[in-house]
Length: 237
Image (cartoon, rainbow, N blue to C red; front, side, top):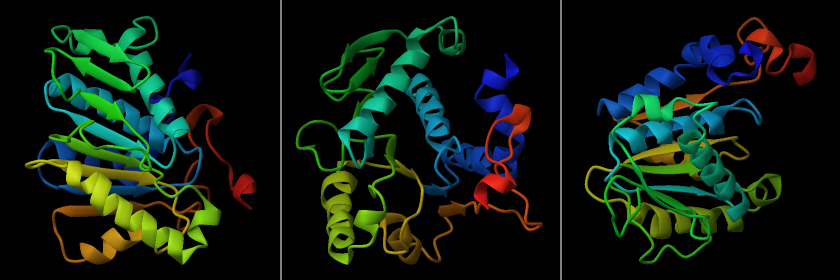
């Protein structure tokens, strides 16, 4: 049913926001860093998971890392990724990538490997506070989704400083070669990782920052998707 599809109801708004075009720029090597800030429940994380399944199909032998503030959230990435790859009734991944085989799954380690056996898997999902030493490296994409756990962490400068340090020492050091980076999140503070990246890359033409407010220029909801999906103006008010 159309209203149960993910992309079709959101397509018009996602194109308006420039999200799909920005992801294409990553693939086309026009940018190296992309951040997307949208409200909770707007579909940004699901769009990111779909993007990762495409990356895995195009570059199955290049490892990627997906991280978040908790193992519960990375588990949802892992489960969503696996479902798209294995459910041929709901999804068409195998029709799009007919020659890419699933080499292995590891539910405990939250890893998926495609095509050839590799020490570093096609996708590893790991929380930012979990150990990454020797676990993986990123050759194609470092994907970060909601590194800041919420308002409590956002209100603490000490915790935000620690998060920034952990990002730089644990996550960013996994990147190898021309690995690109994508951050998707709800913003809770100007001092979060994305806020600091904005300052760091202020004049960088290879970095793109997308931030979508709740209301458009006419005071209407930016997230009123087709088929009754999304959030109304009244909801935000």
